[in-house]
Length: 332
Ligand code: ATP
Ligand code: MG
Image 1 (tube, rainbow, N blue to C red):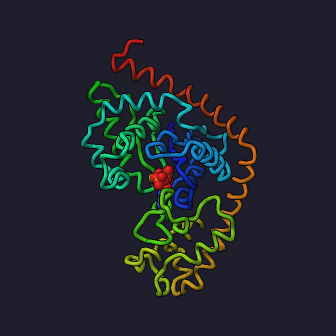
Image 2 (image 1 turned 180 degrees about the horizontal axis):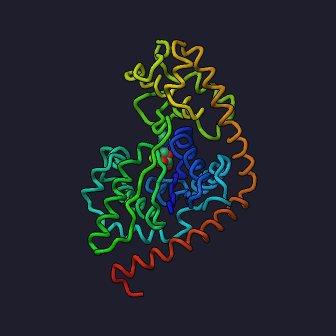
Image 3 (image 1 turned 120 degrees about the vertical axis):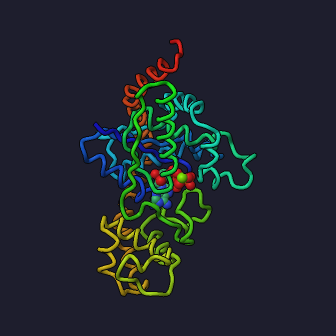
């Protein structure tokens, strides 16, 4: 049976890209008869500096964001990474399987480390090995993610294959990425060439999942666009990154195809389209932000959910780690 794992970093404000590229898919998969494990990856977050109080707050707020979006602790295992120690334990093994050269080719490493790689943390470099461990410590077969994580998932497959080959076993599955929907790569509202990101210093670049209705509407009104009317076919969006982004967002929020959206709005100016988009975004996202705020009023309940999730998770991860150690030749 398929088993799904995915995670999000509690590294700042959750945004529309996280929702459309990841969380919406998490909820969809939960509807099927498959085991789903969703994770706040706090150990990934600390690969760049996190203020301790902010990290604690963001972790709980991310849990609230998951639950408010429709991830049910009854249907899914909801965990915080550091509360399930097998993630880090398997990551060490994978640090010894993965090659330096593989890591050095990761575009996220190159983007986040920038020109000053000497000053980046060792954890930021090793990030994809921990991500492989997150997935494979559950023997997960499917991983719903945004487009930007595709390369890390290929590396996860390489690590699984190398482990299986080196030890002559058929132990870790070769995981499939699930990159679905009309908005697998939501772009910044200020710059159509940059991905919408938690770590972008400009708050106007993204719609946060905690933004209220007025803020959402205002950010869409101010989003960068070009002066032309919308085309009636997707091909007409090719060299118009900002226009394409807004249409993709509309399609994903409405769970429609881009062609279906353009069949309706083709020929309209942004002065007409933006208010429609704002209305749709508010209708979909504002109830989530309200529910997040309600859940954050009682963080003890969130902590209980995470403690229970960790217990459920360890029933899966402990035997897989034990078997891994046996395969390697560790005495225990
Ligand atoms: P950071 O800037 O700290 O890396 P992030 O916004 O990229 O934060 P992550 O926690 O790294 O968020 O990613 C969580 C999930 O959200 C991943 O599946 C990722 O692919 C997806 N995701 C992130 N940004 C976008 C985006 N702009 N469009 C679609 N999916 C996205
Ligand atoms: Mg990211």
